Length: 123
Image 1: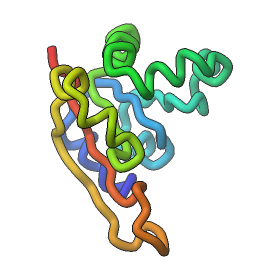
Image 2: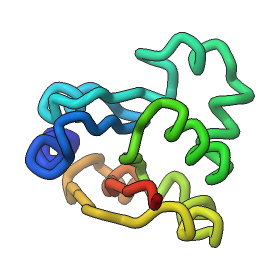
Image 3: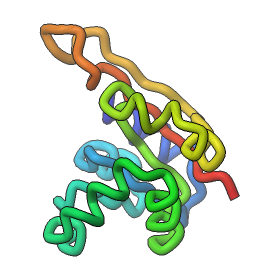
Image 4: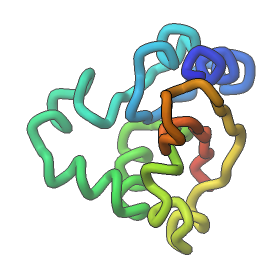
């Protein structure tokens, strides 16, 4: 699934576009774009500032503000893990779903990680 997202990013995102995600590996490799892993795996500020990280993940205003500060226009997330966030009015005002990717065999159970969405930050 992440490989397909990376390929989508490479085909569809402007060359200078940056994105945030909670799963940067294959998306970064195949997408060939600046990719910020908001869990802190390639960003030491977020790795050690757990309050900021939590606010980015759970508060759409903080997410969009952080994205703008990083020059990012795409956010890749598992909507099943963030259902209350992505269904909220603040999130829907600030972000638009651009592409959805699923894997029916992602895990042995019906896990919320079976689907990822690429969201665009509204201007």
